[in-house]
Image (tube, rainbow over all chains, first blue to last red; front, top):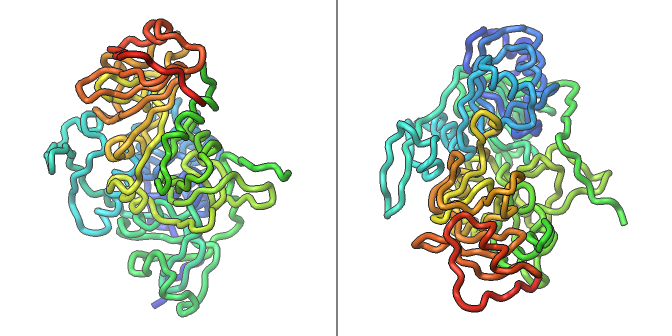
Length: 232
Length: 218
């Protein structure tokens, strides 16, 4: 079995305007840079993007926002992006804000075949509006449903030709759950190796969740907040 | 009166040996600078890191290693990485003993608002709703009044809520307060040089003062 494809352009070739996409990453950490660039170049629009954040003005999903390619964002936190706030307040963009843990669990549920679950997050807030409330052991919980999408685009550190993935440090974040929840999951990796080279004990995302894989190029890995401890 | 570091320093005294702690953005982050000697705590960063270390030296910066505030950080001996679903399992599953976060408003029954100002600011709740709905112990670190000089300790929150009945303790530049189960802010300690009168004037919600209220030792 070989899931290798050439590049980002080929990976996204059948993603059309109006598609719902999941994109991995937390802030700019662990985002699929190559596929975002390819989506910008392809110029498709009316996208619904499920991603924890919306990038910054000139990087990450901010690049798709700038070109008005996104119709709706499903995220937990969208600060750090002035253009996003402008489009939202002017009504050009729809947004569905979801508690971060609920977003992660809805994705996991989508990939795991669990249609819904109860969570305490958001009980008593506007997030709970219209949702079933149930009490367990004296505490109130709200019903949240799974999230699925036609495509999930994730970024890993290493991957093999069978789609097995290993992430690095906090670049893992939402990528494993999105890989599970996408009908077609595209993985871009920094290092692509032949099947057999990765230690099966070290694999974070088993290849069954990945349909297409390629080795990305020219990763910028931009840092949002470069905080350092000066040397004494 | 306390400055931001003073608030952080006072909260650090609430830490107990063996705690797993989640610190929010802003003043809460500063708590990490004042962990008392002999107390070992492990910091959880909800983007997927347990055992958060200090900021890296310039030549150690790694774009793949950040905290929930998107700042570059380091690991410590015994750190671990995990995905976001596992991270919030730690939080909702009550494996994290203490959460410290900021707030725009807190009500006298422990409701908290800190994520949205309708028509003005829409940044999103991030992990705050999961944290406040689940943590066993939640301490709010904040200024006592807002920029307009209005009290942030209220009978009822006016902004959209982040969570209900969840805040246990509040530390501001003026003092330390317990949120009473029956409602009300019980004054536990006054900040250095702050009078009860001053605290009364800055607190719109029900303030409970019983007996002598000591001045805090920071």
